[in-house]
Image (cartoon, rainbow, N blue to C red; front, side):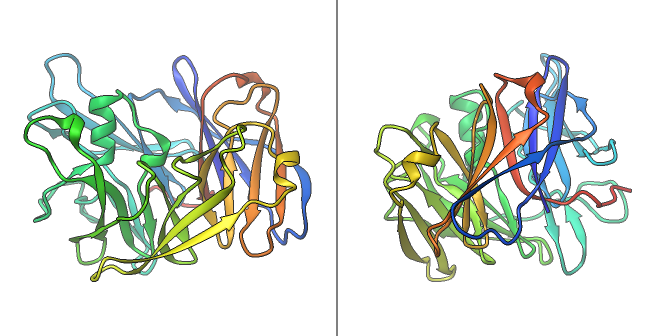
Amino acid sequence: MSILFSCEAKFDICFWSVPQPQNMEGDSSAVAAANHLAPFRRYTRFLGCTNGLFVCGFEGLKNDSKFVTVICNPSTGESLTLPRLKSRTRYEVETYLGYDPIAKEYKVLTLGTKRLSWRKVQCCIPHLPSSSIAVYICGHLPSSSMPICISGVLYYKAGAPCISSVEYIVESMVVCFDLRTEKFSSVKFLGTSCKEPTLVNYNGKLGLLMSGDSTYVNLERTSRSFELWVLRDAAKHEWSKHVYVLPPSWKNIVTETMRIIGMIGDEIVLSLCNQNKHLYVIYYNVESKMITKVGVQGMDVYRGCYLKTYLNYVEDVKLF
């Protein structure tokens, strides 16, 4: 498994991968060399990375409501353009890529496995995905709104639709899509003051992770702990709350504002949004309280660019 970095150049999306460290013990630091992967043309929207494949898309030209989704494999340079999906409005289509490890099958929600064709899946849960809310209000898709796929179930944050104004939509649920049964369900999340928690895989369970009321760990001493809500029972909408207080050594190791990317086992992973002087990734073990700082070399040419970071990237998958 590796960490995948992506960066928007003038005409391309550039990718690098760095191995995820193994057997980390005690507060430590290390350096890893970035592996340059195949670039792809720049698309208008990033839609996430799942098990080695990257999904992105672009809207049609002005007055063209067709939305195009492209599946890319940065390891091989292969890409697959899915059939065009026509929508009533340019920002109504949302695409999420999921992977079922039992059937070893990828699905773009309604993508068939034998032929490139779309088929409808009934959803009886009125909601608007958080990515749509971000597109409407901000014009882009924040990294923390990315969906996550755990054991063949695709999870994404959503809000109940508001008839009067989209600005009043509040994220209040996680929508679950079972890739095998192709059935939708939802679970409410309450009790958190964070407007946009990061979806994480906590040892095979869905988690909502935040620091204070944000998905960022800042330098103003307001980030004193991590708060993790783990889904215990989806049918009963039950969550368990865990609070992890940051150790005193934190202020000596983390010197810049960082974004929560996700979790690998018991380790919270944070990454910089921009690489100014240097690029590094922080691993914080919530059980041992140990911190590991891994510097990334070989990406200086894109210094100052906005970076997106994805966990558990698999480099040997086949697109065709």
